[in-house]
Image (tube, rainbow, N blue to C red):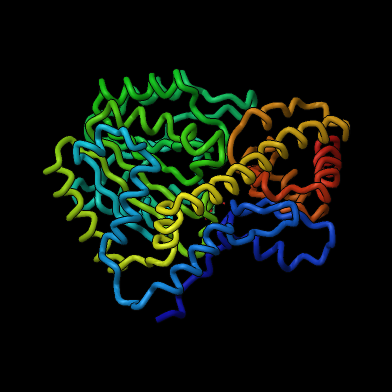
Length: 398
Ligand code: LMR
């Protein structure tokens, strides 16, 4: 039966890692997959997580299932981290949260939950958006339509065009937005834009579907969810798919959440039962290790402070690299204006190169980045930044 199966090309993002590993060039640079790296190019275990692991190892007496929704303490801490302790939705029992296998698992469970109850729901996604959003959400059955978001020439958010297109979004539609650190462009909505978006959602009745994979890596843990909290405060319904991969460094532990805000506690509890039943049909029970670690860290003042300090370090490193790259590109003789890189947030920015130029960087310079010219800024360090800037300059001048 497998004789007719056709080979698929490698994943546009994940495929880069395999190619990078095989490359023998000592100057090679990996700016592909969105994984945080330190100055040494390593992705170490976050120290507070390591300590939580020790605690868990000492206290855990069973590997039996935790609960279908995941550890209650983790779910509670997740909602508080996203919405804040003063959230009216939280305090009025209008929220529920379910552990899912990573941010992608959370997106998939949320999409399946919606599609199961409202088949072929029209879901608006930004252009551009994370390369895996489209296959992940459409294969869950949702009908995807695009809204303009980022101008590749000016490197600005096309907010007017976005809102103009979203005038067509109505009750029963989902609008997927990136909570912070937009993947792939790094351009986030400002406060006024979030307000205008919230107003449109309120007036037109569409439901925001927020992908929150980088909380803490833009401006700060609280600052990065200002828009999310505004939507949660003003709207009757919001869906959030969040991830602990990046901010807690828990990538392989697959730790994410589906958080739902509904109009009444009753509606939320009915939705909760549907989300659990959806998850049961896909993978039955979630992996709990990462969630237990997050729960331990967030419940312990000292570990929490240690984690926050490390998160700040990651964020500041990325932001400093953004500024440095702009300077190094200038020093390398690049004529184009790259200041937008400094303005953008999170792990990613576009270099604004063509696919051919990207392929030249990969083939001739062993610099690995996505065809869209998206770079993972965290892959830059003091040893490779000049080589990167010189290589980009020569590709642009060719
Ligand atoms: C990325 O965009 O590089 C990350 O979210 C990792 C992935 O799975 O694509």
